[in-house]
Length: 70
Image 1 (cartoon, one colour):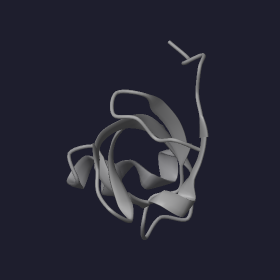
Image 2 (image 1 turned 90 degrees about the horizontal axis):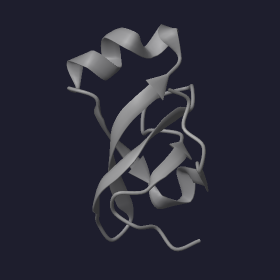
Image 3 (image 1 turned 120 degrees about the vertical axis):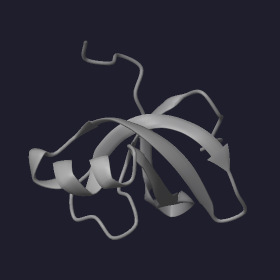
């Protein structure tokens, strides 16, 4: 799968047990930075502590989201 900045994906962030949905902000060699838009309520504090930006291994970008929940 080709990852693109500005597109929204379902991901499993580094050091998180639950999936999140967010927009890719930056792509590195093995990871991406994602601005989280939707997340499990159990991760609320961790997501907010990181200002809604999380690191995700490229292999943990699960799929692209075409219909975002408003």
